[in-house]
Image (cartoon, rainbow, N blue to C red; front, top):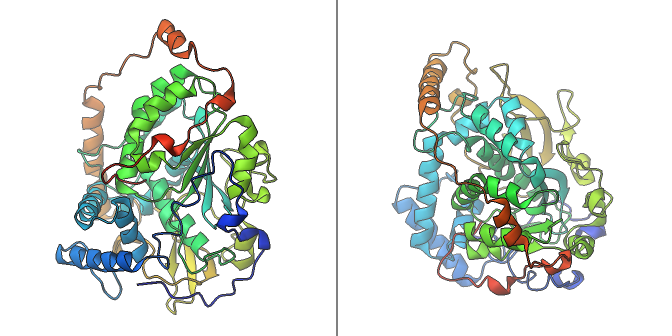
Length: 462
């Protein structure tokens, strides 16, 4: 079913509107314009895709994985992501959706996001892609990731800290806890940033919801040995994200690549499916600003990459002026706070309210931050617990919470007593030298195009 046409005003800054013809095709952008948003998204489905989507929902309902409602158990945007990722093959999409639902339940992801310690959440946010507070010209949120902050020493300390109890979610022995905090950040993308950007109508397709992200990945300052040391961590994170958050990525622009990055790229691209690889563009220094500006307005590109946006690593989002125009702040807030936040509809369905969740000093937050008018109503905005669960104080004597804490402590002891997995030896200095030998010293030779990324079979799309 196509989404309802927005009744909100679509007037806005002219610079926000972009069409294929208005994007300049540089060597790295050429070929990227015909793929992805809005094709295959709500409001832009072919008759065949509409029929397949309807059959997919019927199939999920028959399997007990989806309730059409009203209200539906899952929004159309979520279901459609899985179907697009599996190239519209219903059986494959159902299998991936089922695996994801079981994974979410096993790690109690909804409980984790609602009750995670705010400082624990911020420790994760400071190591992974961060929302700049801005959008690209299509209205998709722009994220920045500076890889050099994810050094091996920091990752080791982070993973050790992540093995301890930091929420009401009971750790799952099969999944472990090292990467669980990372997925609270993905929840923030799908339950906060994307729904917020969906309601901003100053874009070319205001009646089509935003379910993607545009990413600037700065790889400057990382040695070849550094990439090798991060290999296991980055591979595990990418595999889980691809499996359980399909079709949340629109583009990755890699900048600051040293000459040896062609060697690193040979490792990295094996961690991703071909569709994801086709969305990754490695830019030379001369290509950075022209390419970014093809997708992102100059005001929304960070200054360090030639734009005008004041945004540095670890800062909270520098909010889009349109957000400030629409938001009605409450309870003393004038910015979105640290920690997990998400949107819930008001009783009359005319506005969305932003709630600050998580815990501070083991006390659950439930602060109303602001509200915005609804331009695109689409039912549930994400996975949510029942009211009794989300309003329970964290570890405050509540019987269920105490039981969960005790189980978590037992699991933590088991984790700490478990033998460490063997770590692959880093390359020797001779191996590093050999890998670098013969590579071009010119950054503009490290361009990756989509020519080598032909899609075979039915890959899982990130």
